[in-house]
Length: 57
Image (cartoon, rainbow, N blue to C red):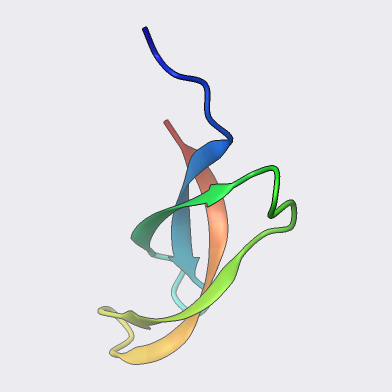
């Protein structure tokens, strides 16, 4: 039986090239707004903003 949690999986996409590079999770009760991190993009080869784009299953 699956346990109910408030955590959801997210895909982080690069703001420059639009490629999904990272998968993370957040607590939807504590963090209601969309998350954004500065991460390294392998395609752009620089550190760019990565924003929450898709909820994964």
